[in-house]
Length: 127
View 1: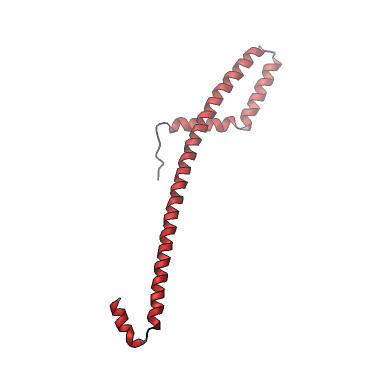
View 2: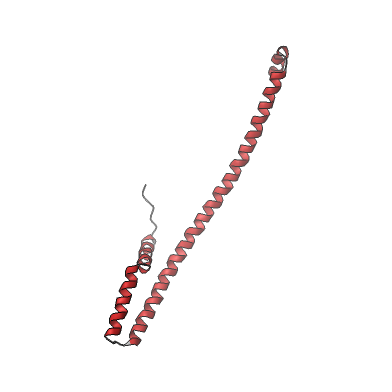
């Protein structure tokens, strides 16, 4: 069965893949090499600070977007869990009712077995 895709899901897929890459070793290594080269060539440190600050702002926006999406998923999952718990409670109540009915029927069967044979026909016909 094919997953139903919503119009924004491609954007969310991009954000998720970007967040996975930002949280990887390759991202860290690239930045360490970048900072090392920048400092070795003694380029303007203010420009580096500005670039890194803008990058941090943009990455934080992507991380917050992913967090909001995850929060929505968690809310939906919690709602589904609550519905399943309520359904489970209803089913357990029905099972208890059925157990009582079965026990009552079993008690009637025991009573019928205790009745002398010549009265059984009358008792069974009256119920």
